[in-house]
Image (cartoon, rainbow, N blue to C red; front, side, top):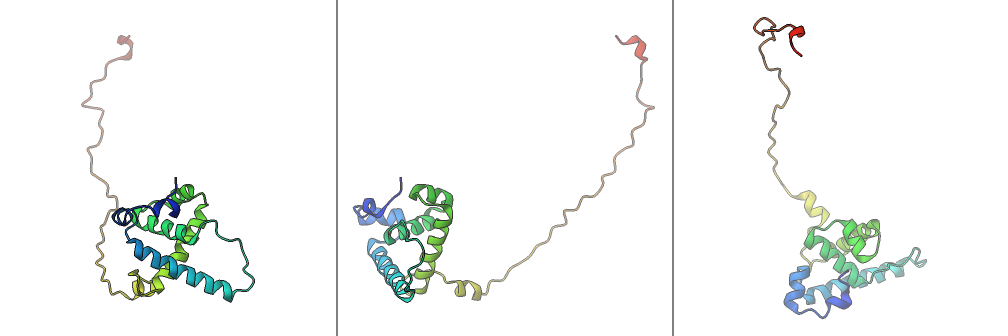
Length: 151
């Protein structure tokens, strides 16, 4: 059963933080920011093309927080929320893009990830097969009995 916002909003502050990793006040700031950006985008695109999301903005953010917090697969989240795996992927990307642009939330941006100076140390292991010398099979030391006597 999905943890929709209607069920979650009655949780105590400590339980909400334990479940999703953010305070309810931070969650409400996230909701406010997402609504602002989505409304701004809708005004920009006058056609409003495409199907509207079946999830509310609160549920989309809860889905994303659950994905980050529990490392569940998008398939499992889709089953829990009653949406397809591709919709889960698009929703997570949308919420990540909106929240990573806002300085109030401490999320790494794609630019930050690319500009980090990480030094990599590469170790190569030669794992090629090499033949092992084994003794040759000789028939001489083996005593063979005539087949006629074995019955």
